[in-house]
Length: 119
Image (cartoon, rainbow, N blue to C red; front, side, top):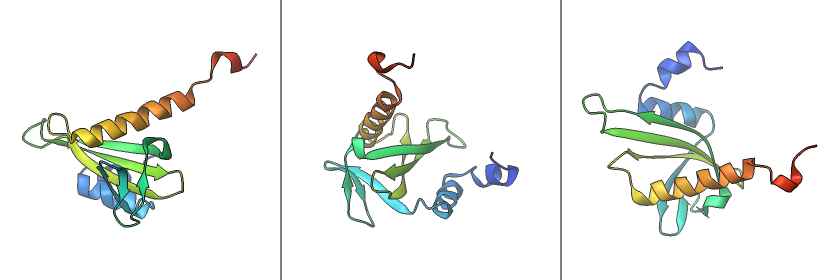
């Protein structure tokens, strides 16, 4: 359950990033041609090695198109970190594609094949 104080803390991108750091999401990630790159650890990850544990969207004060999205990420080897991107028309195509691939993998892993349905 989110407390009122925590909701207040999570209103801006910078305060949300700081809150995630306090929760152990300390790695800074970026997406490049090789995949998700941990800037501190110098490790690279493919979409199937990553799980999005949460995300936060922020709209610009004067222009709703001036938005951002922050992803909280955990890798299969336990590294926790975050990546931010513009939201909407100004989004980085590589980040958008990578995160879409991760989300699709997460959706598939949560579905049960028909031949394995509980009886």
